[in-house]
Length: 165
Image: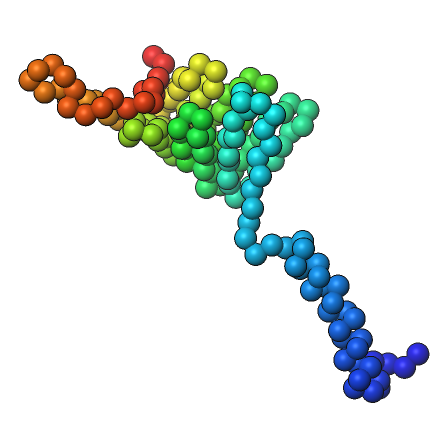
């Protein structure tokens, strides 16, 4: 067999095209130019909960997802967004544990800041703990009423955050 640098130019071009064609076809089908996300749902009871992070691990035995580094959670069904250094989603217990500079925002403006927060999904309840010698901060949007006793603006449709005592 002759080394490729000794092949005539026409054969090199054909050889190069033969190598590039499968890659070009593969690129057209396997690597779309835009990232696409699909969420499988089998019923109305299933709602997507999206977690983005630098690193994620899944423990199949215990059904626990651990996300570390720049964690972002989006849960549209509950109109929640959260950021933290780490989050663990316990699918069997239906809870999420956030830790490290946790910030939770609910549509309507209610928010919470803490070092650690546990979100109990079925109860819609948050349990927040501060750093030592610090406090948990929650901000709730409170409606003002006018002189007639009616609210000046329509009430938000989202329930308020429920921190436990």
